[in-house]
Length: 276
Image (cartoon, rainbow, N blue to C red):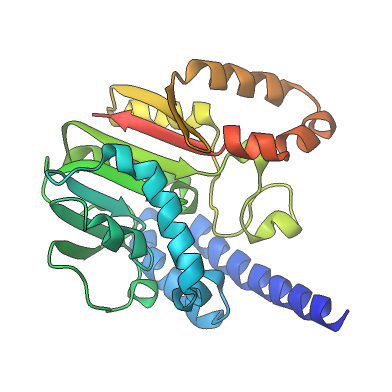
């Protein structure tokens, strides 16, 4: 009972701090958000030394599993001739692993508090961003990857970041974007308290919402990347969008249990592959 109480207090504290920081981001002007993305996450990690992202830096087993999961997604798109870019690289563990398989790696993040200053591979470059900028040369990247990033952007900034990703991609280059599905959320700390994300998931998306956003940014082709154990499928997006439309018109009381199922976590863990 005491342990459960300690965990609950930890979650409540995390929720209060994250919601407060998120509210500042949500209400900030576009100009103010430029600096706030970095300071917000620095503040979060300093205020919460027990934050999972910080704790996992010392957990070699968890880090190895996270890297293996990312490489399972990425390996079909990697080869020694390409330049790879990860947006929202965090502790850079995935980017450093990818560096062994490609010619060049850029790791973009807003915070040194989480990336740290550990020794990096010779073909690796850490780049700090204001949250939407991608400060690498135009038309220089073959594969861009982000995992659990889009939902942390202010919705007014999402298109600008996508346009900057489009700018740095070579013609025919791809952006692999993994993000939680809104109809299965919320997925941030507010899942314990709210029906809609109120923490640092500033906006969670549906596949249809991302489709329109990517199309506006200029991406000519979008597909849905489905991973089921060892099976990799690159599928048209249209059937998933139709499914979303059906779910959204049905009562939440009916759809919530189904959408929360483990089957839906596999099928609707959004993973878009967009081509320039």
